[in-house]
Length: 298
Image 1 (cartoon, one colour):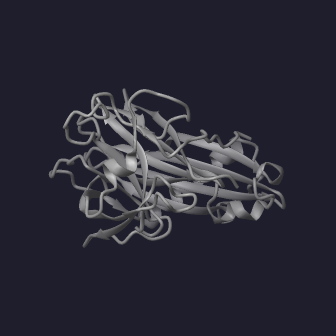
Image 2 (cartoon, rainbow, N blue to C red; image 1 turned 90 degrees about the vertical axis):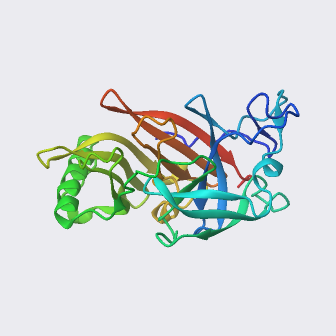
């Protein structure tokens, strides 16, 4: 199994050079995850020179270190709520959680949106950058026929990994979302499926699928993982069924301004959250960010 990796972090976080030196500049552009039914903000990455840099860094002494809480979590500070890759409302800081156990670099927020109400695995992003207003912002459930086609692809993908699945009815899932990263009318699908491989083992699949101009769907990128009970920190394999260790869609954001939105995901663990971002380059989906936000020891 691929081990879930967490960097040992501290709540003092790195801010780009120049900002922490005392110069009066606007805060750097940053991306946050909107979690816990839209009640919590968690840091993902800075946007520097059209690239992502993980906000949370390894613990240790470093120049330019400052307090993210004081910089971004001032009461009533507002951020653009991102859903479907476009502004869908605001996420307003209620208070920082600096004195809260296991949430020292997170914040309590209130979400105002006429378009989405975050709940469970229906999550979103927040940022102080301003996405283009022309974005269509498609994020919806796939048509039943698209879902059937995707389930067949998922089953084939799992069989290729020697998973003993016999039919699509045995598949389980946490998420399957239809999006359009570049507004070209050819949809993408982000999914998180799993299979109960045995009493003490689970097979997990995260994927990005694409639909071509002829209407055919294919899986363009996937991450497969096999989790055994002995590798689960809680010692209970059924914990996995609730979403722990599964990679799940947050939303998408065109952070570099090239007209194609990048896909952001989260993988929750027992000691914190892993965050990922995927960018389409030269027709291929590539992971451009892997960073972790440590909460506390389990």
